[in-house]
Image (cartoon, rainbow, N blue to C red; front, side):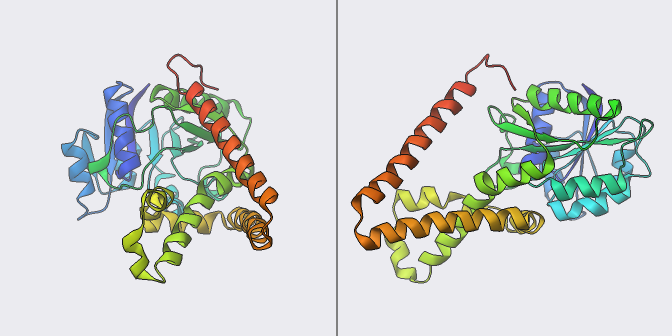
Length: 300
């Protein structure tokens, strides 16, 4: 699909994408960009996730027909500014960031959609792990997950780029869904960002009495798994999706307060109703996910 792909940031997501591209023969050459002194590039190269490594993003991107930003989100503006002057017409730039409205505004500033220029398409593959680094990368990391796609123009050049990026993500195993950037951020604030906020807060709440941590069992460990996620990445996510995350936390605390009230009042019917609705919704969700993940199911 691509002659030369530049992956900027070869951590878990970037290196896993490199492995998937190479294993599926979707790119003739994959190059990685990182910081001098970081071991990530060497590890990604040794694992076969990239064919060549660069420290200069502009040099790496200049001859590429696809550039994928896989760094923490607030690094994107500086990177877009650096690569904008060197990109060829028709080059597609995309990302794996977890927020989109702010990212699309930065892209519109540095890579405005033009028929004779590069094109930015927002991507958010809903895949990953609390583990980090290229040493944990897997070629099947994206298999069976969902990728949310955003664009901000109906120009033919943008539509063509969107369709090509959609085919790319589908080729590495993802199901795709197109969303407006603001709708994207509202959705993920509840289904992705809120669970992380809760996990971080739950660990900190328990840590107020450290001695109790010696008695934790599977429920606590399972519920707080994502509290081990990357600090820098999640700081960026919360700060670039502030309004939607705050709204999601307010809705959650309202529901938690209602359950608290039912428990305080000894209202068994209300407690059972809350637990029953949650259990039923989760079982339905798991059934839909299982159906969608079956081989041969068409992506949407």
